[in-house]
Image (tube, rainbow, N blue to C red):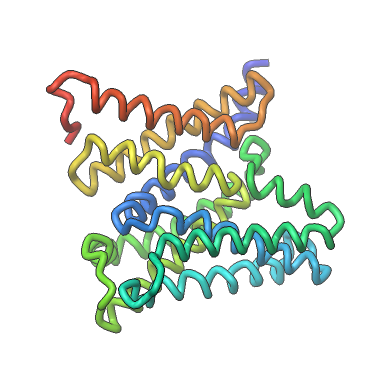
Length: 277
């Protein structure tokens, strides 16, 4: 019995390792850029693209459906790559929030026209990492490895762009920014298919926030974001399996509570608890 359990959990655990690592890395960038909600907006727009594909009669796994998701995602992230936030009459975070609400509202309207549309909406929100297949995990790992290679080669430039957080960038830097957002969009779209919107958002932000409270160095924050995200994901997978509850909400609750516990330790803990770096 124990052997079958371990074999069953090996797949979601592997997926959790991959997601926690990649989302922890991007979460550090997103937190530094102070555009916290862009990932949930991108994820919802990607889901809207899928709904459009389903409405046109394509299967959920069809390439045409994915192309609709990537097309809409590219429009959004392309706008942020070249956006001059100081020229906008409203804050960038407000724009992101409105985009998310529009994406969700349009998805709900389209779901009324698609058989089983409400079930798909629920799946995109909560995800189901516990039932991910090895085929999906392998394809996810290969894709993320290619993206990791891009960031390994251009990591210093992406790091500088995130730290500068300026709007008046030269054209060359804006194209680099576009590349950053394109890879980020691909990661979010693929991650949502496995983990759901709320889990992806939480893995991006919660571990990065927790690490930033104690760690000063960029590399240290990325490492600890991955560790915290991994611990929360694995704990949520085990709890959801043992208690037979939804895995996505379980992971989100654990990670959310962990951030607040770490914040309490930071505020009320001993004076010597200042930094882990």
